[in-house]
Amino acid sequence: MVLKFLLIAISTQYVESFGPTYYFYFVIALIGIAGVTTAFLQNEIFALVSQFSPNYTVSVMSGQGLAGSAVAIFQILSALAAPPSTTFDTLEENDLSRSALLYFLCAFIIVILALISFYFILIRSPLYLHHREQARRVETICDINSIRATFDNIRILVFAVGFVFTVTLSVYPSITAYIKSTVKDENKNKFRQDYLFIPLHFLIFNLGDLLGRSLPSLQFFIITDSVKLARMSSARIIFLPLFLMCNVDIGSIGMRTFPLFINSDLIYFLILLLFAITNGYMGSLTMMAAPQVEGVARDLAGTIMSFGLVFGLVLGSIFSFPMLAISCGCNPIGK
Image (cartoon, rainbow, N blue to C red; front, side, top):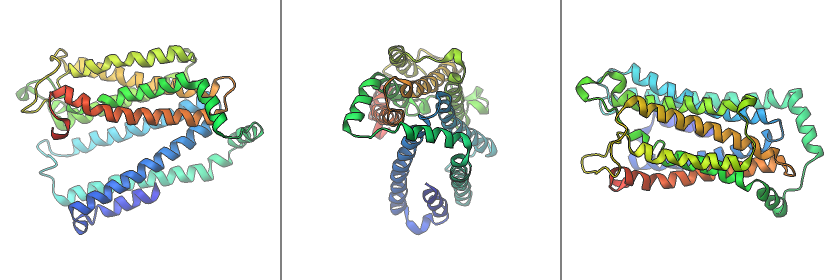
């Protein structure tokens, strides 16, 4: 991941040397590498943190939410720093390459700091050494039988976490990024203009997601019953038609499949906030609950749940195409 961010940062200064086509394939290749490294890292992190008490799982989930919030804040600040009439089409090429360089250098530095924090701070701390020693005493052999037995014990939770992120990725950001302010153009302030309204929706989602991920740190909000969690996860499907009834931009040739029922920016943002809170809350609860199920290997349960989470992200990404087609009554690829 360090190498990937370093390469993409350097490449922003040599885009013309690549040419548009070759640079596109270069970036796509790095995205593929990013997917592999991120998935592997996430699996290992959840396998590791599952050996600790559940509140550490909440910390990992909250850390992911914090990262998303930081990116959203950076988007807002970048949009505010640009003149109101500025668009990507009017920005100077040097400004774009400089912004891209700084953006990816920040990511490079953050990953370096994470690497240093792990190898020079975390694995040397007494708490970490204590839990790792306990885990070694009860280590189980990972074979097909143990994987099947663990999956059978947590399969409802695997469904719950997968469905949470399937629903989320089905509309966010594929649909929500096309939702615009309902205020008429002549009456819009700068926060209702597209260049700020869309980044603002990312910020609201990520802050809500962070809040939801942090809620299980309080005992009052902890739920461990797998059937209840599965029902709560399934109930989030109600958000799909709600977003389709918001002010989705259907383009010049589109046709609304759902009526424009939610004709208020405030109500839209409240729905988005609740959507985000439930996403983070349900994600944390399910990831916390699985390693605590009696009779499972904790690290294996964490790995299986991480796979369920990623599988939900994949399914949600796939379903985002038909959801986008439904939103505008047109071909989502050609939109």
